[in-house]
Image 1: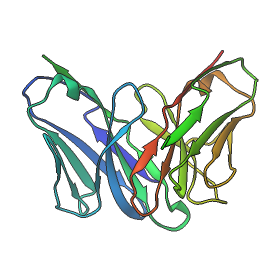
Image 2: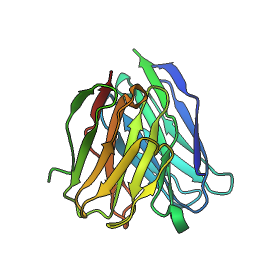
Image 3: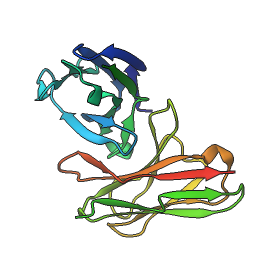
Length: 114
Length: 112
């Protein structure tokens, strides 16, 4: 069974801090790993990673995937109160009877204080 | 484009009642999904449909049934609702070529 584990489960920081969120996974036929941000509504897409070692960046957010060690990290630099949200990691299964299955981790709750 | 739409937005049921949650997407996506979200549990996959005409169980399928009515629509049915099914339900769709998954606004269901 596909499995995604995120850590830490919650994190409290002050504005300006840098945070690193972790996502480890086990999946039978890995296709890609996706990061989402959720603020009281439906999740919104941040990044999709398919290749090892290639960093994806969007402003203060960046993410990298290690397919050998089966994990990904999401970095947020110079955090702002607007970054407070639940960050979700998901893996896409590309093979066999689980083709198209997208499994999420339990999420990391990030709280940024002024 | 409306994207992914879900109805209803809110619903209160009594134990034992049945209901169907509707989901539709207008992006011509192949794959559609139903998730439930409970506090501290992330998103748990109930059922998914990788393509029109196929449906498969996810992590927590017990107590639910689904129908992929056509390429646009994927419904979730609770035959006999239980308090443990109180949750927020999200429908999502994905284009097989691009992998990004788009979510509907969610349905908040309470079973008394």
